[in-house]
Image (cartoon, rainbow, N blue to C red):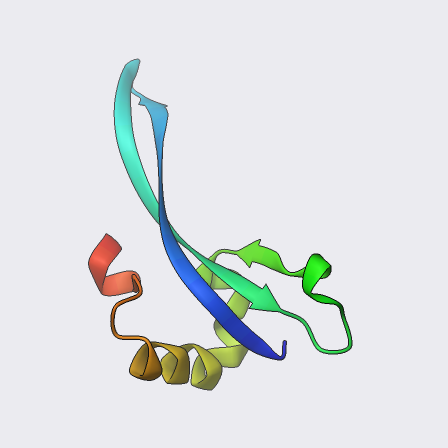
Length: 72
């Protein structure tokens, strides 16, 4: 990973015990090393566990972007 471009909260509906429940998750838009901008991907936080310093740095520089604390 080269850097995180942005983060976003996504919302979706999931069936829980035969009831629809509104769910919220966090996704990061990632720029990959040696890849073009067109190859950026949306990744869940668990896919970035080995890059915690980059994630923390992103949130320190982008306090207006959603983080895990906004979702939980």
